[in-house]
Amino acid sequence: MNNDLTSFVHWFRAAAPYINAFRGKTFVIAFGGEVVSDGQFVGLAHDINLLSSLGVRLVLVHGARPQVDVQLKERGAKIRYAHGLRITDELALASVKEAVGIVRVEIEALLSLGQANTPMAGSDIRVAAGNFVTAKPIGVLDGEDLQHTGEVRKIHAEAIQKRLDDGEIVLLSPIGYSPTGEIFNLTLEDVAAHTAATLAADKLIFLMETDGITDAKRKIISTLTVSDAQKLLGKKHKLEDDVSYYLPAAIDACRKGAKRAHLISRHRDGALLAELFTREGVGTLVTPTPLETIRQATIDDVGGILNLIEPLEQQGILVRRSRERLEMEIGQFLVLESDGIVVGCVALYPFPEEKAAEMACLAVHPDYQRRGLGDRLLEAAQALAKKKHMQKLFVLTTRAEHWFEERGFIETAPEALPKRKQVLYNYQRRSKVFRKSL
Ligand code: ARG
Image (cartoon, rainbow, N blue to C red):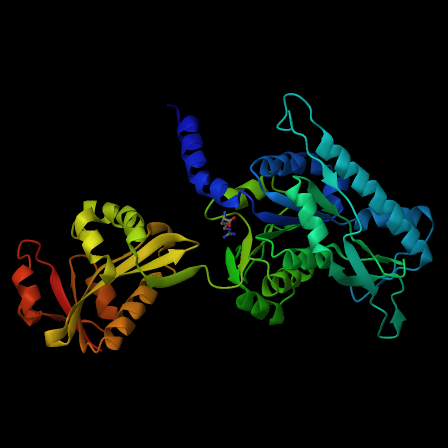
């Protein structure tokens, strides 16, 4: 096979777990009116169609800022903002109604485009609209009456779910209605965050101007916990406009029930698919709890652990363990899981008669190294040993002596090992023995 085909096959296989995992899940995808005015929605429509055909329940939330500005200009009206929010007077409201109508119709048209020879061929997407959003006025901010600018009061989740159950895509606009029949101009991030939270959506995805959230060195931050994201907002350094709208919304949604939020670029073609169907993604993922957790291994982890340690066994870094042995000893293992995949492990063999334990098979997948995960596994193993009233920890290593030395281990002779272990000590392998008091 040529390289392209090999990488395609590799890619497709790597995507399989996500294809499986996403079936029947609910994603809220939010994007500004720029996506439509810049002609990018055609490409996005193809990807949305693909997601829908994989059984993802989709809610789209669109904005209409540039379109509203056009309408205001045509009416010769001034564009007025306060606290980052549009002041929606009567004239602005008329502009909002018109602009939202135009954007909606365009989105619906593009989602209906079932042309042959395109990814849309044979697609039959129904787009559902409705008064799913109840709003209330924001009122007066610092002496400025925002008039028809409002905020979400309630999302009619059941009505949306029914549409999704019927296989429709729900399209929400940034407007809401009050029980007294008034219309309010809302921000798309407010609608998107409330919707994702109320539906307990599996994902809230924002398409932004930038590639994701960047750190002080302008490098993309791949994953952030909600609390780290909150800290980032608290820092003084200036965030891009988009980030300052979308990150708080992402945090809010995750706190109130959305499972995770993604912030990705609207400019990179295919960013949505790359984010969703690869492990590393391309933007920033915000999760309520850390993606990486350490827990006791179960028999279901045997396959994952084997995948992880086999390459290391081949390189002679770890001692070979058969599947049978691993199955028998699985109770001795802790695994480090990242997003449901086993990416690290460590085993702890206790020798209670000598109040000592051997730590073995410490491994972290190459893609996950240099992030302090080895330290976390070591700490977890140490904590477990202490809990079991062990006073010292042994480790045998051929290749990682410095790593252990830097962490307080001291080299010792094989004769210092617990008796039962000494018998098994492999003099040919000539591992170095290290110990640490707990
Ligand atoms: N594809 C996975 C998902 O959709 C992981 C994405 C990881 N993205 C990231 N920016 N770290 O959940």
